[in-house]
Length: 315
Image (tube, rainbow, N blue to C red; front, side, top):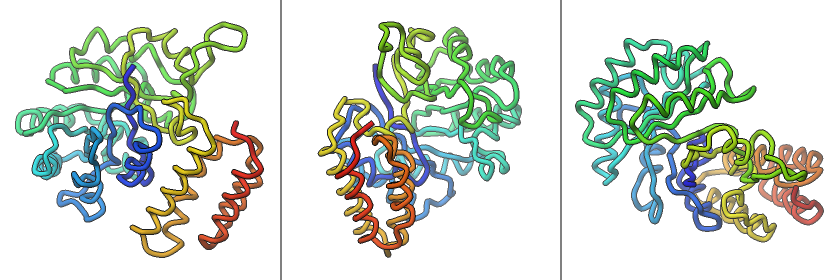
């Protein structure tokens, strides 16, 4: 099984990837949070600079519904030495989809087809696609998967949910299975993999959200993209759940953000966002998370984090 790190806006930036790779690893490919500006911003450019991604296989992800913008960003990526880029057709955020981008682009299959025709004809790099299976109904997937099957994709990453479902409810594994018969490109599964457990305490198949559940329904899957599962338990892929490793990982992340960002407020925003996921690594952590969220200075934040690691066991 190969594992990819999903792009999560504002979280899995180059600094996070560097530190995660150092302490944990186990990731075959790292996908960047989306690049959307025709001319990359300094923040976007920093995320794909080769010197910020040494020793990792990194794939820049592009979010746009304009072929000229996609090709311009891909050209910049090529200039930095990248051989592949990824198209985001999966983001369900309202601010993204309202502009017809991300999963919102799936609402317009004719426009999407013209877009794909142009980028696959003109892009100098290999193209992979990350997609949802439709907007409102699972039946939309038949047309979309037939469309995707026409292009020489490097890979198709499928999150088997609809746009309207966001990240709630169960995934639709049958849609992923149906695509295997229609699409020649390699497939990657994405969605709700939170644990690599394969068996339940009673010896049966582990429940929803586990590798066991996934393989019991889609035994053909050999590549999985993981996002929230890794943020919740950074040692998920390697089995390293040591609090010593987790503390060292956390502290180096914090120190790095303090170097590259200005002011306590910006650093705290970044770290508090991470704790909305990482808090699930601990038992009975709610009152500690409240103190972390209320911290108004780095010193207050450090004291709250110290209490978590000192007083709480990992869940």
